[in-house]
Length: 155
Image (tube, rainbow, N blue to C red; front, top):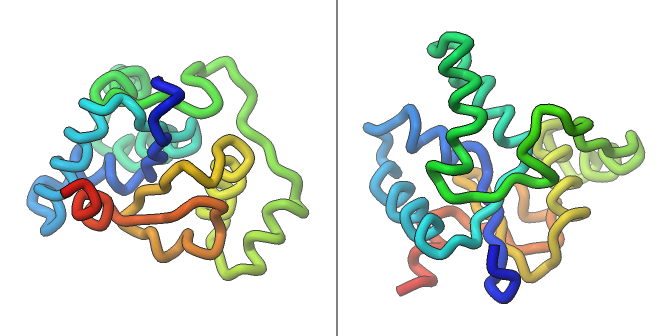
């Protein structure tokens, strides 16, 4: 990843729309965003998001397909994985106090865990992209946008 470019963190729902919901009203915008990220090479997601995508799709995949998805997703979308793309790393940890501080801001547990990892791994110069960007606006040190908002900024 080019350190001179702003890092763009991508939430799970962006990948899910591309992989499963091809008839979604946001599919074309979502695809344009992912194509932009693939060309720019500055996309990143977390191991937690990768596991979330695998979990959502696990109901329709066999064991081999699920394993392939785990390794294939970062390559397909040209994204890096925070903190690492290995099944041998420790699950990213947070203290209960860290998570409780985010929950006090009206967050789901999953969003709080992602927000804590992102805040502790990236700077305020990064962008957080999610179709649920409103859920993250008060949780992150960086700006949260939808893929549609991001693409409008690129024009």
